[in-house]
Image 1 (tube, one colour):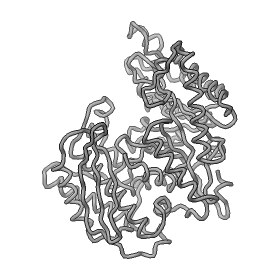
Image 2 (cartoon, one colour):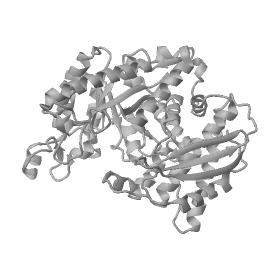
Image 3 (cartoon, one colour):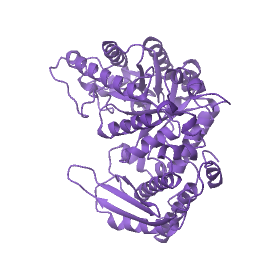
Image 4 (cartoon, one colour):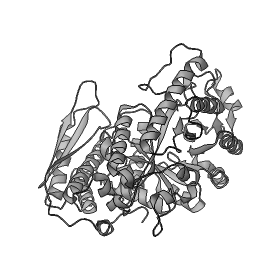
Length: 501
């Protein structure tokens, strides 16, 4: 089936493990609520080697201790006594335990189809939770809570498995994914920093959801982070004069994400501003530009086009005047790619205009990536693969229900030649494991905010891994971004990481 990682295949990918005897002896959870911080649920897996924890933030702030205890007890009954290195078997046992609990309460099954993370996530979309979340509605039912607990348990088990095997967590993920061990070269991802964030279609701000700076030409990940910070400082110094204000509004903790304050917030205007900031920072040959178009937020179903101006006083008249059809948007994207040397474009069209998407992917030598385009629907992914509608996907760490599903999703995308860009789920508070997972599966790219607190800890962990690996680490730089057709290919015999990327 699509994007599936079976327990037998998973066990075969662990040649370095001597099958140490380390079994699960207990599973506990605790609900934490601190003033000024989001409420969190911490899951603790106890083994013969010690205690291993992971936490997540639920989708609402209500008293849910009873549900947490009930789900944790059900999981404990299903996995106590199992060996921690049997990651896939444990993940399946957790799903079975939660399915049984939901059936006893008359709430149906939890796990849905037991396949990879993308397919299983479709169950969440069908339930309406994702749609309600996009609309800003706070949702916290037993299904989403059970998914969060299941993923936290899976992360804690993976930490225990790495400890039992005597290897770092990212090396454990590398073995689970069937990649080469870190002694032959580990690929460190290219950071994609959000520096200008557009607003939802509320008739203010740029129509594009996010603009990205990509330090593809850096020699290392740590250098890429430094260059991203320098470009962001240059951008902040330019936004004030461009907007006619003495002080720059920074709603996102120092992030230059207030596109509504720009005097020229069109796509070309924002790209010109980014280009100027990159030149001012002295990184014109190193830092590239990308866009997250998020076409679903600008598409007008009434007029059948993409609204390129949200600020008109007469809403219907302005939407009609600035509603561009797919062929015109294809010309606009093509000209922007040519004029600003874009290397990354996410969700440029809605699914209805898949023909234009196919034309753009075949003609533009850059990454055309799908995220909201797929809406977590497996049949769309299958059709995109068949029609070659794009050449990459965005995988949100924490959106799947287990580590096995996360690995299966990313490795399967690599196998078909797609690039994988990892991002952080809003409820993911365990950024250390997220960084290890992105490095372990050789994702190649991570998308994060430039100054967000969780994003900073995420990048800090990748820098620590880079220092730990030393000469065995290879930064996935310019060649990876410029030659996207080779993103998913496996290494040939005697081919080093540097030669591939």
